[in-house]
Length: 421
View 1 (spheres, rainbow, N blue to C red):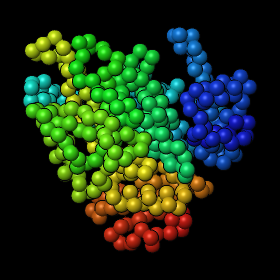
View 2: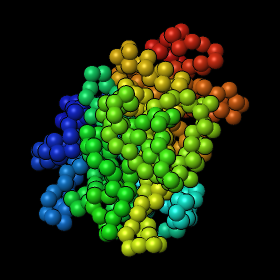
View 3: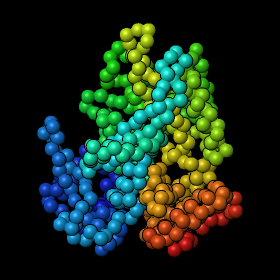
View 4: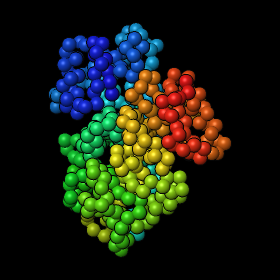
């Protein structure tokens, strides 16, 4: 993310959370003039830095969009809809149950359908995300899925795994962990000073806790994230399946797994059925295993055990760790990398127009204006109709536009720098 500070462009992406706070405090004390870097200086909206004192008396400094004409006299200036500061992105996340708080924290409530805690494992749990609203009396709640929560985590500014820059240090586990400090699920941060509700497979080789005598064991994760293969050596043990998890940092499945997570066979089978159903659209073999668990008290003893509410396999590119929707998207991503391009791969919709959620496949961010690439892998009338609508929308917003239809043209024949206006 780039911002103008007193008319000078600054790139915030190399800074970690603490380094950003130090910079923000410096600019706050200097009363610096801050503008977003998503457009040329003379066109871009103002931002400002706010401070908030926590319960422990520490002060947090963060970027905030200006609201209202008193603060922002140029209120008609809009962010690019691909910019993380845009209100369009915030509204689109709201449609999926993700609420963005001004200090950069994201909030949601993850719920599931009724499960069966018998020895055979859970029944089909249907996940949903309920957005928390400023008006606590509001009865309107938007539901989505565990996948939306995972993608929101990857897209947070602290992680920005959806963004690629050549020769950068990806460090996925560290990025995801930093983002988890700013993600609240069911009113609890995934990572706080008190507990850690997330496990990320990296260099730690210990077992993932399955049992606990206390319901609030701070070392027992609810969210588990690891790298893996769609088809692997899944060991069966009575009513359980062992899923091998590899490091999200090196993503090398030739190595010994970092650990294995035990899940109920019945729930794992539902995941395999979904993978098999989607395989004809997405033949990518590697990706993330994402598991959400809840604690349930044993009917035969005094201890608690974990019940898997949902298990997901998210296909992704091995080199970057960026999720992809199809093998065609993976091919396009690999071409962009080979050409040294800087790009975003949006994981969540970034605008909601005329009842249509807009999510470009790729956004090239190393040219002005930015270029949007759509990989048109389907040929149905409804899909092509939506694609035509999205193209018109991109061109109206003054982006360049490139479209690749794999069934008509080889990837090597596409001239990415020759685009529609």
